[in-house]
Image (cartoon, rainbow, N blue to C red):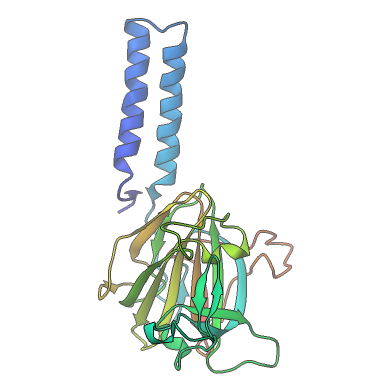
Length: 282
């Protein structure tokens, strides 16, 4: 049922009641030359902002077989075909002289895992040049969520959460927090979720914090079963969600800001749970 997302009722009610109390005090006791009334109106405006931010409308979930729906509301920043070029090192590899380290993203081992499409650990990806496509490529769709968009995230498919991990920058307890519309924000503080779909393939969904968004709130955990379009978490304030899927199984069905389509200068706007991101390869 639509309404407010979890955690949204308290800030909306508190700010609304503060505004209402201030208006009543200003009318019955003393307005202090209108300052009490001004404070009350500002509280009401804040309550309206919170209600808009925490809104969680119902969505009609497509029933087409084999499709993947959007996990987030927002504009499609880019759609890319990528391949893995590295991975997080195991504990036994940390002392290797092959380790490549970045001051923000941390250590990388310059080889992908044996089965890149298992998403068994966080991997480093690069775009695939035309003519060099392979069976282990993925498609990535990045969605930018502005502070005015719905921030509840939904599962792109039916399946089971196989992995969920929280990542921050190297040596940081939190962050970094680059603006979410920047491509480099993919290494911001993030939560990576791997879903084993009913079709026995895996997809990776990454909730990424932005410059304003500092809190990623998962509502589910490992081994939880999800339906297509089911709510599974949210990110507070502006943020970003990336989805990676096996390129051999799916074809993107959205226009990005990089496509050059004059109809979508900011990228196609998609809605969580109802917009189709990928169609199955026939």
